[in-house]
Image (tube, rainbow, N blue to C red; front, side, top):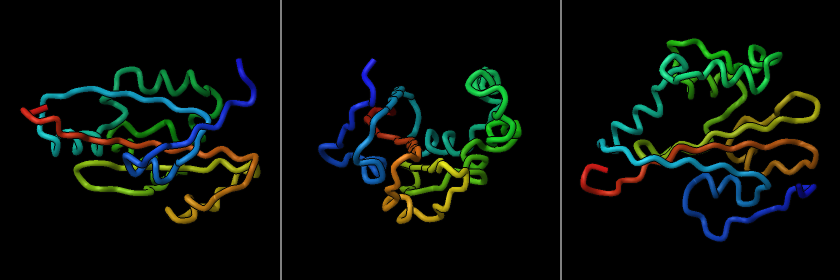
Length: 145
């Protein structure tokens, strides 16, 4: 284990995510090919609910059993997860409808995030705070993929 985690930098912006997080310490990437129209895939990303994701509540509870209810992760089963996230601590930083959406949050040491706009998020630079960004990017690979 290396402590602290090394800072990595984006070499070239390939998505809006890279614009908002050009340097980072931790990352996670998931990719899946789906045989469907890109517009349908994007709509599914925007509309998926907690009830539609197998073990969603169990996995978020395991992550933080005492605070999952307080942090907004106990999403109502019928509400789209991205809507629940943006009504709590996450902000939509960028969206190219049908292609990409980027959400971000800042967890500040005093518990009060004062980030309200994408520009404030991009300029935020106070050591000792956690910054988190997530994106969903739909890419058309052709032939229905």
